[in-house]
Figure 1 (cartoon, rainbow, N blue to C red):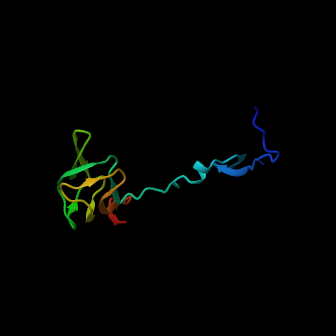
Figure 2 (figure 1 turned 120 degrees about the vertical axis):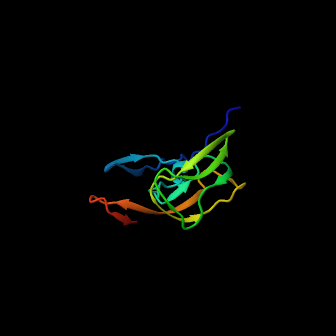
Figure 3 (figure 1 turned 45 degrees about the vertical axis):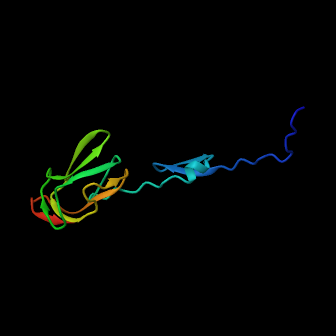
Length: 125
């Protein structure tokens, strides 16, 4: 026996999608509509890029740090990953403790970044 198809045909709905100021008419899936929206990353936050366990924390709240200083060690995938500070500044808040297991995307440290302007004078952001 053949299955009978519904006489009601599904109507295809096209939506407008803008990519680099170009307008497209397309079918958008539910997965695309429910995706996580991209946000500009905050340079003052240090995220974990892999899940792991914090084995050593080198800084505390209020410490002054220079670019390249050690922040912490994250044990992940049978390796010890040393996380270094990307910018000079002051530690606003340390959100991890030794022995804590963290997930990917966890905010480990919050920084108060000191940027240099053209005259090499420090500017707080």
